[in-house]
Length: 249
Image (tube, rainbow, N blue to C red; front, side, top):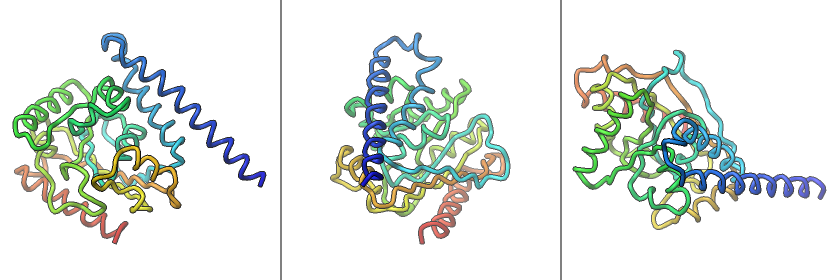
């Protein structure tokens, strides 16, 4: 009985900390970017860690890489869940490319915009072209970026193909791809399926009977190894199929 009381107190304290920090981060998002640009992005990464702790998720980073992670990179990952929106910022210093709808999410949308998140309307060719240029501009300004080559949440298994965007940008800029494979041990609880809402998924995260989440980071991939974006994309896609067989099949 005493154990459950301690656990409840800790759970409550984590949510109080989370709510307090959320209020601060949200209010700071209204300030001019000229005042917040030097600290807000890192603050959101810190906030993401508090969010994960409040949800009771045990996020672990597995460093499968042999070579050191480069100072600048294009992070790619499979995308089975909404949890990546806080999981990636909690572990990696990379600005995310997100679907345009995220910009209008309650509270989270404003925070993500203030943190420098880039947005794309996935079904719009013009928007994808504009997003590509924004990614190149961000990389040219010394930032790292994170995106999902499946083109959205496609389920618990790797989608039938990767889009070329990340690999095209990598070849244009010379910035390597940093592959991260995401593994949610309780796949039913973490997989985001239509028509589930974000609030429903957060609830599923917090009550999952298996809260273990594993992010496996592998060696960065140099674009100079490849003669075309198609070859580059296919090579990395096959790596993800191999990792899927290792961790999920």
